[in-house]
Length: 610
Image 1 (cartoon, rainbow, N blue to C red):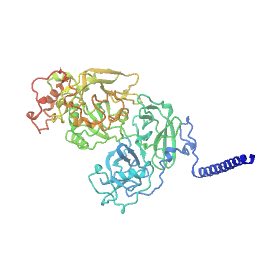
Image 2 (image 1 turned 135 degrees about the horizontal axis):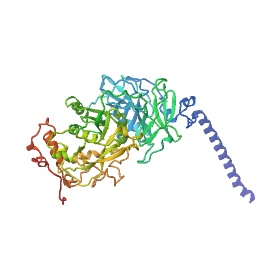
Image 3 (image 1 turned 180 degrees about the vertical axis):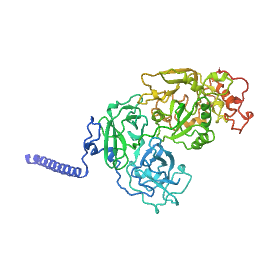
């Protein structure tokens, strides 16, 4: 009986011994494989070191290692080892050519993706204002989305002088009207490029700009300060200059850290011109590894040749070509000398409208691309820093916002440089002037009024909810922190509220125009309207859901006060239809709300709609 009891115990012991031997063997095999395939990472540089050292040159960065090209097969157009690509929302790919690369001599360019071999037309955006790099955008073809999940490889930009049809490449029809794709038989096969950066992956240093007045470098990075109003201490951030071929050349402490903007010292003398490859910059946070980056260092631009304007206007735009002329002509008449536009992905006739304003109208209008989604605060920070030498004051107002004084409604004289006179009377310690906003509604319109914005929308809300600002650029905090509506000024300067002027904000327009705001909000810290977030935000519109569905009674919404004062002023100054060059309709063709004659009207309260 005892022998029978011991037999199962022996079997259990033998089984445990076998399992132990197998486990030890697997552990030894795993250790052997790890020691032969995984390189040893070197420690990060000491946090107190501020100059380039031999250790920093040998510093192996994970973020830099990820950029090493696995294959250096040349492309048909140019050496693209220093090109960068990032996957933006909605499967849009942004490609930046290496700094100094010449623009292709043809307009036929393609993004060729190495995973599936598919291609899509590349649309030229122009040069980046920060680095001068040529920017292109293309749609990621559907085969590539399926082929490379979860890791996407950067496309190669191909320039085709004689494209040939090919049915093997799937090209989204929305990205081009052409059905031609590059022939795979006549081109070098696409190389297996580096892993493409992703906009939504978290932290990313996406751009950098050297300032002409100080030489400081502004590094624009998302994900380091992800929450509004909560900014990491600058002492926790280091600015890392590196080359893909040589590694790190300098690690310097950041001077400021606010939102997506980080002010860095310039690289040590000589590092920008010595070494092989493009000098790049990124950030290392709290002693960690540097974050992924597509930002490059370009020396500061030369001083501006033109005389500094007294008043400039700056805004970020998307598809506003049909509204731009009215905004520019009006604000030029009241004292804005120069207009600075940052284009956030327009696909309308904006460039042609700007060209017409400059060549035929004689207006000082410049347009710069800013392709980064939801980065309006960073764009305004760059504008304030880059134009400090060419503008004394800058008004940050959108194309649907018009600065107006009710005193002009009772002055029968022609328009004058009223804004310059107002700012000339501001005391020397005023660094920012704020104006209250009056929000106008659809005013009965179901389509865009042919007479224009200021003459077509004449009914508004009673309450004043927000403000906009005119900023003295040399009074701003070095951090350049802003909330779009205003900036922070240095301690020796103060704000002043102008009570004799306001901003007419034509916010709630006819539904066909207004619904476009559902696409994407431009502010970094404002939720898109399709997201179930921040329901109490003043950026959201009362009565709207999460979809672009017109609510009942929209044409008559937000109408509490009849206010046609600016409509009467612009009609007197510029004629019906706003510009006297517009002769496509007469006064009899206008809606009843626009057919007004007689003296200027005074705003009056309307009864509530039933």
